[in-house]
Image 1 (cartoon, rainbow, N blue to C red):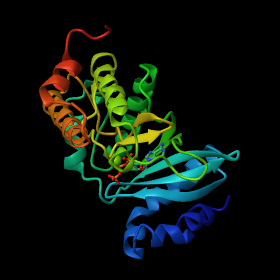
Image 2: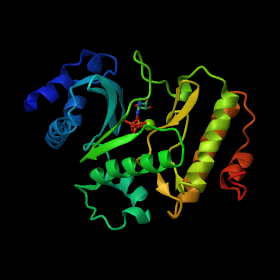
Image 3: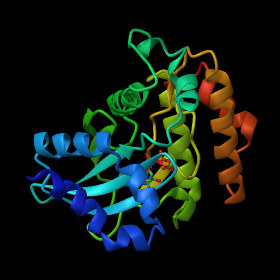
Length: 254
Ligand SMILES: Nc1ncnc2c1ncn2[C@@H]1O[C@H](COP(=O)(O)OP(=O)(O)OP(=O)(O)O)[C@@H](O)[C@H]1O
Ligand SMILES: [Mg+2]
């Protein structure tokens, strides 16, 4: 595949510019030279056939549906231009799993992709529903696609579902994450949970930290608060104190 074609495919997507209201300037920022090179290398080594469409374009990452052997996958690209060192550093410093990495301003975003890969792997090992991570390269992460042929799964915020059932699944995942995977999500909310085939899938775990991280309790309490507020608004009985006790409680495994 010639180098231009990966980039061309990304940029020529009319939907990309139209639906996501992303102007040329922003697109330029996303696909800086290092990212284009990494993209070309990754698409070749992973045998990705083509980029289907962008699922999401946010401040710090762009997520694409891509096709490999006629099957959909998801490629997440962390933006080198906007992921700030100071933002990332607080989630890496203090996480003993990454203490041996040589981290500096130019490679920290690469550690981020590796961190998300590692966290997804750990979560799946413990039975938490989330995308399956396939591989990472520089600031790119390849994972399984959550959604139907027609559309990616909606975020919980936009989902039409039985919130009582989803709450009990989510709180179970939160407890497993904390007690078995020994991690704290650190950005958990209705924006980072997808609803697919009657189940909740946890996404966006680049910032998730080990339970040993000095700010783990602070992150956990914030996650619990977000989840409690969201489900309470949906009419579910989900008080903050109960959820926190359930997640941290010594009674796991019952
Ligand atoms: N594996 C996946 N399958 C389907 N959709 C996905 C997948 N991963 C992410 N998405 C979609 O892309 C959105 C953004 O992904 P994610 O939350 O991981 O990135 P983000 O770091 O929040 O990005 P930003 O900072 O740019 O908002 C998700 O809210 C979800 O809608
Ligand atoms: Mg997100």
